[in-house]
Amino acid sequence: MRTRTQVGIVGAGPAGLLLSHLLALRGIDSVLVEVRSRAYCEARQRAGVLEDGSVVLLRDAGLAARLDRQGIQHGGIYLQFDGERHHIDFRALTGRKVTVYAQTEVVKDLIARRLADDGNDAIEFNVTGTEVSRLDTEKPRLSYTDASGVRHEVDCDAIAGCDGFHGICRPSIPAGMLTTWQRDYPYAWLGILADVPPSTDELIYSHHRNGFALHSLRSPSVSRLYLQVSPEEDIANWPDDRIWAELSRRFELPGWTLDSGPVLDKGITPMRSFVSAPMRYGRLFLAGDAAHIVPPTGAKGLNLALADVAVLAPALDALLHGDDKPASAYSATCLNRVWRSTHFSWWMTTMLHRTPGADEMEAQLQLSQLRYVVSSKAAATSLAENYTGFAALPPPAG
Ligand code: RFL
Ligand code: PHB
Image (tube, rainbow, N blue to C red; front, side, top):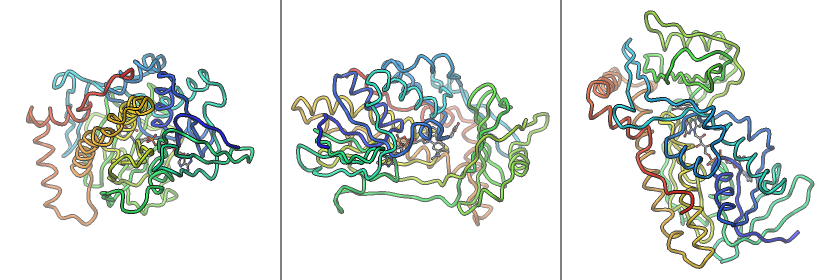
């Protein structure tokens, strides 16, 4: 079946969904295709922390009704090391805060809004055989097979590759056109979602001789916790009791206890830093994890994905009206923020994780850095400024 649209979008993660909504607000049509089911996209456990800029972006785009009711504002984080827990007060240091609101909820809100505005055709779930072609022409093509087996060829004015790190858009760019930088870390995160109220009022990032641990949350009754494990670790080796025992050890503090509860979900995530540039080839624009990955320690991946499409929507609007200038600036504008977040995420990660096989010198250097962060206002401000979001986002209406 041969059709046309203005913008073809691959991937219904936060980047693709928000882009289709921002384009719709500008009166621009899109076709959004997603390989997974709606239920899968809405249940995939991932990020949990939104920068103020991301909250404002979602609010200005009319997407924050539930976020404003259920999001939990956090004015800081705890850094734990050497048997002590220290508070970093973002509000006092920067006047800013972050909002705990799960990526699953952002995705549910976006899907509900797209379907309410444009009906069931707004998103094609369960597609197969997605391909993008003719990228160096003014009429790139998005091809896919829908859930009922019909093959679609969609002529577009531009295509947005929002299909994550393992998607097909980045590999569709001819060899030699992209420069990539990648670092794989020698550890992974074992994450659990647990049906138990959080044992803390703000997130705890803990440096421990057994490895890093993070206590986060999803709501006043659901906790999200992570443990550093080996990237080769098999989740079958981690029954719930062992996970809780290891979490208790890594967060141990006199007079404080970690409450445990039923584990609702668990999984292991590898950690990598990856940047590919430029984020545009002809009429294909990459956004979010399709173009860059950060390790989750800085809570940046979701925020970067939203920031990219906040820049991309007005750039595509201009391109469709004959002005290529903002589209030409898209990659450099985004990469500025991407590299800042890449550095910050690398810095948080290497300061807090234990490198397997590393000598005692590394642990002492990490502890010295942590002591500096909690005792120097300048160092604490630097962490707070980066964590809460360093660069301002453009307004959604351009
Ligand atoms: P996504 O969410 O991966 O969405 C891409 C979508 O594309 C679909 N797709 C295809 N569709 C059609 N055809 C194809 N051929 C396709 N190939 C793929 C996929 O099914 C998927 O639906 O990318 P997007 O939109 O760029 O969003 C990025 C974020 O999901 C990611 O950066 C964050 O989750 C990272 N992250 C965190 N970010 C934060 O800002 N704060 C956090 O606290 C935070 N914590 C985390 C995280 C990521 C984690 N994991 C699991 C990697 C914690 C963890 C554990
Ligand atoms: C989460 O809540 O999933 C989360 C929070 C902070 C991070 C990473 C993940 O740095």
